[in-house]
Length: 112
Image (cartoon, rainbow, N blue to C red; front, side, top):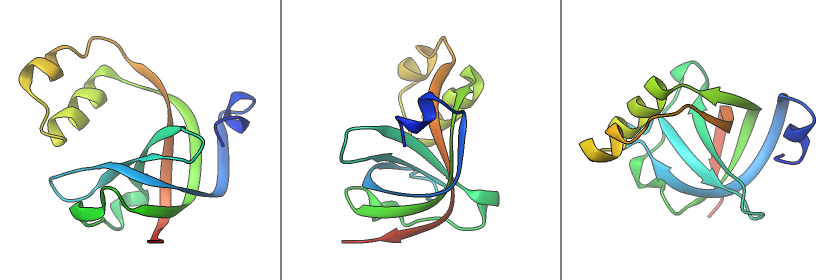
């Protein structure tokens, strides 16, 4: 997926397998995933139609949805850092937007 996103900005209807490395501790409204080839990306659930258990961290999942490479604003990065209960110093240290892979999941299946 990461290789394909170097030649296009968006891939629709893709399935990806990876390990959940972080979960929104508030209500499971977003996760971070790392694939076997080491690619990491941020996952939101389409239309906030579902959430995941906060205990999903460390589990392997298969995601279905759309992947895109985009710029995440400073404001949005700070919002997710607050959700993740980062310290004020860590949040204040966010000074630049970030170009990253984002995944909008239609479904998530735990596979282990």
